[in-house]
Structures are given as structure tokens and as C-alpha cells.
Image (cartoon, rainbow, N blue to C red):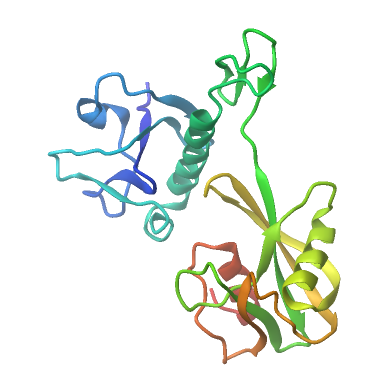
Length: 257
């Protein structure tokens, strides 16, 4: 029987990893069983890579120096991708489990139905983990310029790409066009799907597009942005971290690996 891994999330943004390996690794449930408080609730998460038990604790301590609680986001750069992808799913499932304790129809406590659903024993309502889709778009002007923005909620001085959540009754392409227009005042054309990335902060799906500048002058949405401008290759500002789909869209355009 293969070992079950444990995704133990701590506080508001950390996960326990095994640090004695060449790269941060997921511990097994057996390795951390003794350090879990009695009565710790775990949920089962199945992924293509591993069977996982996941749990969330407000705080955690272990006397074993092989394990430590690390900030979750930077693990993207150091943990092998299959393990990090599995942890992302586990993180979303733990968040959903904590946020869906009661039936939205009648208020009764929900009970597990399957690994990805719950059911109300009183009214029969079923609920599943929600996913919040958002778009992100690389707007090109000619062969040598892309539109980049600096949002007010960025934690440092980097620039990113126009992004925003999809609204009710809106297609992904309509959202791309609306977000670019609202944030920068520009019009775009030739919108093409590029790729997507699960974003477990807490339960998003980033859907990437490429589009072409069609006209207009930049007029930023000041409630959202500090700056927006077209940048040329070789003259780019500080960029988002490698973990993000924004950086992947930019790196493809610049030809960076």
C-alpha cells in the first residue's frame, strides 16, 4: 500500500514541508501523525499524482528539524511541479470545506457526499467547490510592444498584465475586452486563448489570452491602477514572479525560457 501524503496548512498562508530532501517535499501522513493535535480533522484529496490527506491548523510546531512551515506561494519555485500542483488542489479543498459547513438553502449542517461534494440531509441540496474564473491578457502593439500595468494592490514595484474577474452573463472574450477598456481606455482585437492556471488564493482559475491593440489612448482606471503603458523588448520594468501565468505570457513574448 502506497503512503498517503499530508498537506498541512498553517495559519493564513503556510504549508508544512519536508526540508531534508534536495527540494521541499510533501511529508507523508505517517511522518507527521505524532505532531497533529488530537481530533485534527483531515479531508481526503485525490490527484493524478498522489493520495493526500489535507488539514488546516491555526498554528503548528514540531521538534523534528526535518519539517517546517513555509510560506506557500514561494514553494512554486522550489517544490517539484507535480507535488505543488497536488498541494494547490488540497489547499482549495480545505478552504471549501471550511467555508461550506452549512446548507445555503435551509441552514442545516452539510454532510460529505463524495470527495468533491456535500449534501444536506434535510433538504437534499448538493454543493461543490466553487471556482472563480478570471482573465489575464497580453495586449500587443505591433511586433515590439506590450501593454503592462501596475496595480494598486501589487506588493512591490513590478508591472503585470491587465486582469480581472469574469462577471455574470459574460463570455471570457467579452471579459477580456471589457477589462482592457475599463482599466486602460484602449480597444483591442484578435483575442485568442493562450492557456490557464489554477490559482488557489483561494479558489481561482486564471485564463490567459493574447490580443492586439486596436486603438485609443491610455487613460487608467485610477481606483485600480497606478500606471499603464506600452513597453518594448529589452526595456521591460520589474516583472511578476515566475510562478504566475502573467510571467509565463511575458516570457513567451520575450523568448525567455
